[in-house]
Every structure is written in structure tokens, then in C-alpha cells.
Amino acid sequence: MNIGEKIKRLRIKTNLTQEELANRCELSKGFISQLERDLTSPSIATLMDILECLGVSLKDFFGETESERVVFGKNDFFIQENEENGHSICWIIPNAQKNIMEPLLIRLVSGGRSDTYTPHEGEVFGYVTAGGVTLFLGEEQFKIKKGESFYYKANAPYHLVNNGKTPAAVLWVSTPPSF
Image 1: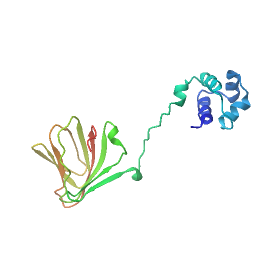
Image 2: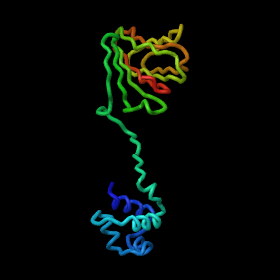
Image 3: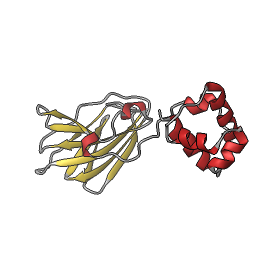
Image 4: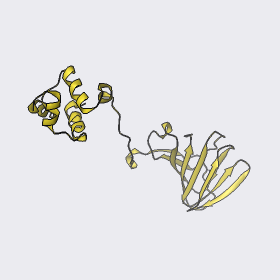
């Protein structure tokens, strides 16, 4: 952690100049400048004074909160192939199992099928991005084409089958994560 860099961000956020912060803390502007450039380190007492002037507790200052990532690319994806059943599952959000929902991209070759999932508390959403699939939901079957979507409570066993001649792809979102 760069203490000086973090102090500088807090100072700017509170619209204070180095001189104003120095005056409030009874320090020199030169010390604040050196501190912000990590050329010097404050004592614990001095750091506490500076943080008090910035309106931040010691606990909050050192509490590292990692900013949540928003955008993910191909390098973040994890793909699991199942050649026997003719499908692949692509986790398009890393570590999505810790989230409320789990988005996946499921690809099915012609004649391919997904695993069969057991009933669970939650819901499932899917959007067919290529080809077509048949959704088996309990005793019912639903044919879904490219550009169509499905949504259901996961209170019956379910799986997908590609009975078409071309590969199929489905954007699949499950809550809670089940893959």
C-alpha cells in the first residue's frame, strides 16, 4: 500500500490543497508533499492526525476494499469441454459461484446435450444465440430457436438437447450458481 498516494487521493477528494491540509494538521507543506510522494513516512500519531483532518478513521484507511471488476474478456473465461455429451460450458465471469447469479455460455454440437440438473431453489434464464435447442423441463419439452429466450423456476430436472444440424449456443444464467 502506498500511504502517500492514498493520502493524496483523500486530500483531493476533500478539496484541500497541500497547504490547507498541512495547516490543519500543524505540519509543513513540504512534509505533506514528501509524504504524498512516498519520500517520507509519518509516525502513527501524525498519520492519525492527518486522517482525522481528512475525516477518515485508521480502520477505514487501512481497510483494503478491492474495487469490483466490471468488464471481463476472453482471457478471463474458463471453458470445460464434454466431448462425450457434445457440449462445452464457458464461465464468462470468473468466480461467479460467489455471486447471486452465474452467467455461462453453453455450446452444443449437433446431437449434443447438456448435463441433467436436479431441482433446486432458484431460477434459470437462457437466451439462444445460435442454432436451436430443446429444453427438457420435468415432463415438458420446449423448442427454442435463435433469438428466443426461456425462464423458469428450477423446481424440476432440466437439460438442453441440440436436435438441429448446426451447432447451438445458449447464454445461460442460473440463480443461485449451480455449475
